[in-house]
Length: 199
Image 1 (spheres, rainbow, N blue to C red):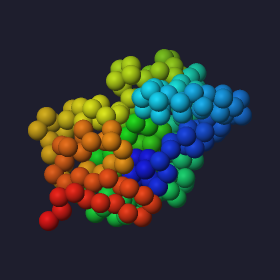
Image 2 (cartoon, rainbow, N blue to C red):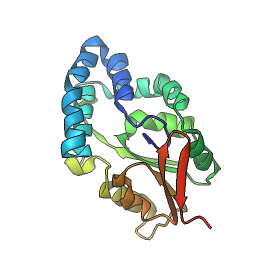
Image 3 (spheres, helix red, strand yellow):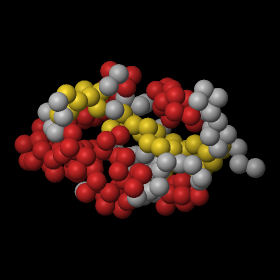
């Protein structure tokens, strides 16, 4: 999603919106304090680790109903304003649209399904207890959809022999799921993308 369907490559602004709208100023401050650690882990250790810090800082103890409410009422305006025009043109022309994202599904699904016409959203699943997010991810570190986890989630949803027509990504960690697609491409910058293998 980030850097592919959206122009922005960072999901931090959307986590910050959820933190502020559903948790208030103190939750936003906690996220801001944790963001340097998230950035260091993301760039030097692994994408998974950085994303897990963002998820924990944003969601731990928050009511799932509040997260869903912000995802329906606030985030669509910001996500749709950040659509990458070329990626959107390809995405909107497809028949069945599946989105794979490392972002929490609860945060992105209302926009993707309700506003952008996605048929299926496969994202990171947050763990909850008695209606409140624990801040952890279902399935542990492997539950963050990055790298091979995206390919595994796609095969799990569409079948082991799935071969989607087009796959778009913007990071090297998108290559495992893109390898399953007949045509794949990387979105390189704001208004340019290159599709490998087009005849």
